[in-house]
Image (cartoon, rainbow, N blue to C red):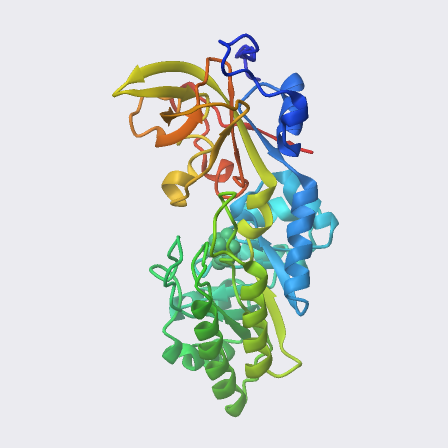
Length: 395
Ligand SMILES: *Cc1c(COP(=O)(O)O)cnc(C)c1O
């Protein structure tokens, strides 16, 4: 239970700069107004209609690819349950995530254990829960899997270029593609069932070339394996699919990217190939709207400084871990001034933006951010300095 009193909305702030009339509010802003009547800030609205829209955009763009929602982007149980009800598959990285998705109704055969490094205990859990499909990228892992989950189905993750991606993943994961066939043969020798190849081009990847090259490397391993009597069937194209964070952002066109990736798939692989993907950000990012309020205001270095009740230790944690930038919006219109937004903690790291052009704000005013559903609450610290992350509200 939170004991904080709600901060009253400021309806009486000085004039030139009145709150916007309801008729002038956007759809999201009207939704925020509604929610403010019932909920204390900070809160994170997750719109189910947008979750569904992102899923269907993905399915339209990649009709032949089965998406496994990577829950690390946002593991909120109600989001997982929502996708499970739609029959979506899941990508989990630990036994805890596995238990969470099973509890929310996912079927074991709809789950991939997509962490190439798994503890023995987690492998035992996977065996007990019959989550049979998993990734690996090294020999030691194969011995561990063979010992703790005999007969498991394994997918080799290869290291691929992450050029231009906002979050690099090849620094930590992926076997050298030259070693690919050797490792798959080793898996078979240990009694495991080699099923295919996976890669991850890095998160928020706007560079199409990463996917195209990765598919080419994958096709090479498929060919070598087939010729040597270890036929593979699954190509896992990972995650990384980019979203727009700013209203006027250019250079992000998921549908066009998907079209090119699809063409490469068709050219390089037989029709019978089973394609899967592991989108995280793409599924939940656009669904999230974070609503905060100004709790304090100062004037320093010729700028208005606004202190919000959510910061980098909370739902803006993506600024640290996800290298993410956000678009700050208010419910006021009028002349804009260069301003600073900061979080509520006593750490000067907790500054969200030093150069935002916004109308003058007052204590109690709302500041909100769209497209913040992924890698935000997921990596928030529970209670640093006594400040809790936003409550998540599904609508
Ligand atoms: C993080 C991660 C994902 C999801 O990545 P997005 O960029 O959010 O789509 C998918 N697969 C693996 C193995 C991951 O580590």
